[in-house]
Image (cartoon, rainbow, N blue to C red; front, side, top):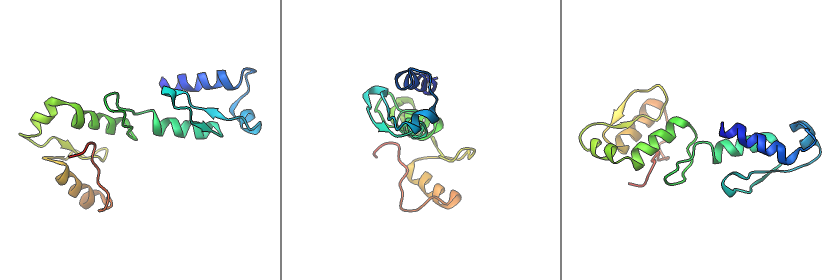
Length: 133
């Protein structure tokens, strides 16, 4: 609902006469993101939607990090902010594969990284950590 509410507020501010997104783009009006005081100016409704999805949609309320999907946000919260997870991960594999649909779990980030590269062809040079180790 947050995205829909943000879009509704944006339309209310930018198009008091009820204009649609195409009319607003043709007129050269800018879209201003007002989520959490962001104030980023965007040139089109499509650019605004992309910005909102990337910067605000899956944002951690604890640390402010933004994840690309709801599932990755959930894993981030578990691995970074959940004390039960921290204790359990000392005893058994708890670090889930980041690829949706893969059910593998690992004892730590290193083992998961190796799996991502070997099984899912992730680039070797990138590190997929939710928090600093």
